[in-house]
Length: 635
Image 1 (cartoon, rainbow, N blue to C red):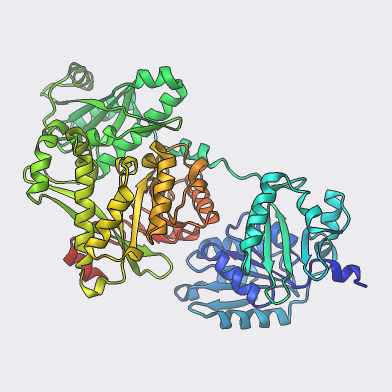
Image 2: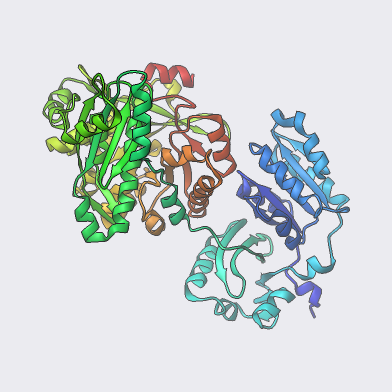
């Protein structure tokens, strides 16, 4: 006969793991060492979570997240009382700062690099002096165990009391306690579990909770500890609120007045087309969100132009003004191209477009006079998209359209593991034009399909001829919304890949959020076909739309690429960081690797690493490079 103590789900002692970058990997190692892993990726409420775990050892992985780890150690200091132990893993570069952890109450240390055996031996030494904690914490554990020998689900006493059930149930009776959706989700996870995993669900009467699941491969026993959580942030709402707002008209006038005291001022007016139609069809709230998206696109377009950054101001309604102390000739085509791409409005793709006008200050002008002339309008000095559209076919045939390679870096190792092929137009008069301007001109010329085929073929052919030093890199190429809508595109792309000689297994296709929204059903079918053929699939520019969170789980994806605006915002305020954290957590819970685009500073990279991002690309490593420069960087 089995005693109450034997029936409780405590056959393996719990061990609390806090790792900001490698939670799942460490939890798996701990499980292989004989512990029940209770793992966390964030330091919030760490003291409460440790006490609730019933663990006698807290393992803090502060590699690449020293400050976050130190904050967590200080919070745990009072909870980890002798004979409990606190082990801290740190990078070797942080060994000189270990005093902070000692003062916080840490009892054991391990410096990277270390292997699995070294970690497990260190934990065993820590466990020798850390006796299991009994008392209230042990009695208050919420958990269950499935024992295949007895064919019963055994509940911890507290869980049985909370749900008013006996402490031993059949598997079918236990599953019936869950609503249909959580029941299906749990059953799916249980069918595929191999070692340890964690599952976030809403469980009555606990609310949002994490189930830390661990399978004992030898006995077939399944162990679960349940950790109640607070309400998660509304990531979609935070994402919308995080979009930057332009200056207002009064701020623009003040800036212009000050700039006129120092010299000439150039102003470019941008008037969004069809905004009244959006307001009428979708409501003013949708129109306001569209204006915020347009402001973001204008900012991004200007950021890609070398030189002093202009100010962006919303003058009212659908009109923006861009002001600078220098000529804005390059700004007009970049902005026009950015606004020519359709916007996502209430789940639909809506073309907008814009009218552009420019003026330069004259002697004696004040801000009011300059803005008055701006309203009357003067021709822009920049080449228009219509002009570029006429020139594009000749540019493609004449070799002006080329590709550059931007490295993609594994954050954990610092190794360059892949590149994204980026289209460039080496215009004889305007210099190098980016992909947005290039594809906007192609849309205007009716050459979008031809340009997409041209760039994909060029990238594959060039990559197939890479020198041996680049032979292990992955290649990412872009697929447009137009490609998704084309019948037979998957077959044509695979034929193009095979004809080039580039291995399918090293190729990733990237498709933008807006491209997915346009033809979601067709996109899902196409992406599934490409994955079956051996390619990897990524969603690009994630965070630029408003409906992404609802449909991500239904698409066959391998990578999620965070838009550069989100990646760069992570070093801003706490709200910005919460947005990025929510996106990364969501992606990892869906089994997707996360790539951050546009990373420019060590601070951004450090924060992204702390939140669990695995890869990055951006100027911090390198700008888009020619082949020779790429080979030199990798070699």
